[in-house]
Length: 241
Image (cartoon, rainbow, N blue to C red; front, side):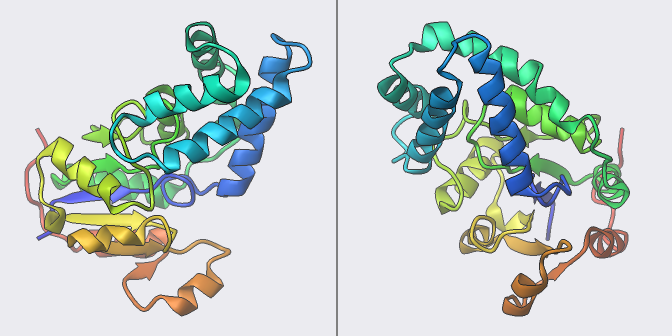
C-alpha cells in the first residue's frame, strides 16, 4: 500500500521547463559573480557546471556537497571559505527572484495538500545538486512551502544523484521507510523511473511537450489533473492533526 509520495521538482512540482530554468539560473549566477569578480563571472559558472558533473559521478564515499566544493576549488582556484557565503547570498537574492513571475499550478497545489490531509508522507525528491536553501525557494515558487515535507533533498545530505538507484534508497534509509510503500512522481524516464528498481511505484507526469515520451511508456501516466483525480479516490491513512 502506498504511504509516501515522492515528487520530482522541475516539470513535476514546478510546471517550469528544466532547460529554461537552468538557463535563467546560470545567467543570473554569471551576473551576480561578475559584479563581485570582474571578468570571472562566466568562469565561475563553468566551474559550477563542472562541479555538478562531478557530483553526478559521486561514488558515495562523501556527500555531494563535499564533492562539489572539491571540484569547484580545483577548477576555479577559489576557496570554499571565501565563496560559500557568496553562493548562499546568491540563492537568497538573485536566484530567489527567478520564480517571481511563476504562477503555481492549481492542480499540483490541490494534489499535494490533499495528500497531506489524507495522511500520506511527502518528499521532494529533486536531484541533490544544490544546497537546501535553493530547493526551499523552488518549493516556495510551487506554492507548497506550507506543506510538512518529510524531506527536501539537497546536496548537503546525499552522496548520490539521479538516475542512480542509490539516491532513492538513501531517501528511504534516511526516513526509515520501505520503497514498496512509495510512489515516485516524475516527468523523466531517465532520472525518475529507476525508482521502480527498488520496488517503488511510478507515475509519469506528462507536460505539454510529453507526446513522444507518452508513446514510449505504457505504465501509469497522466497530467497533474489526472493524478489529482486518482488521489481523490485514495483512502485516508491518518487523520490530519
